Structures are given as C-alpha cells and as structure tokens.
Amino acid sequence: MSTRWPSWIDGALVPPGGGRIDLDDPVLLGGVGSFETLLFAEGWLHFLPRHLARMRRGLDVLGIRLQGGLEAGFERA
Image (cartoon, helix red, strand yellow):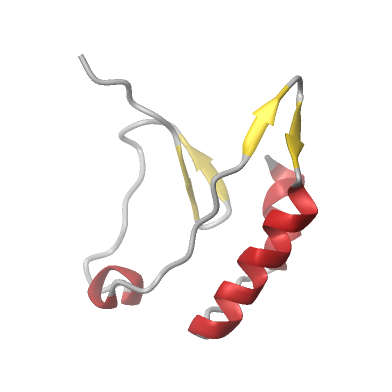
C-alpha cells in the first residue's frame, strides 16, 4: 500500500488526488520547475529563510515569477 500526500499547486494545498495540471502548462511541457524539501518538526518549519532564499535564486535562474511571491504561499499554509 502506498501513502498518498497532498500537493501544493498554484498557492494552495490540495488533497491527495485533487491536483490538476493543464496539459499545455509550460512546466509540464518543458520540464521547468523548482522545489525545496522542508523539515517540519516540533510545530515549525526549520531553516525557512534559507529555503526561501535558495528557492528564490532557483526561480530567478529559471525565469519563473510567482504571483504574490514565495512568502504569500507560506502565510496561507
């Protein structure tokens, strides 16, 4: 049995199986994207400023712009 996990898509946490990506999405077509793995333990995200800085650099290199910025997504989470 495999474990199913929620996804973070377009600034929202989506339940397992609920995420949808358009077939003409540039990320899907071109394989362009960036991700960070964060440690959430004891009720908080560890090293968040470092993760955000690294993610921001990666997105800049790829030319990806996020609506509202990175922090906006974490405020809603």
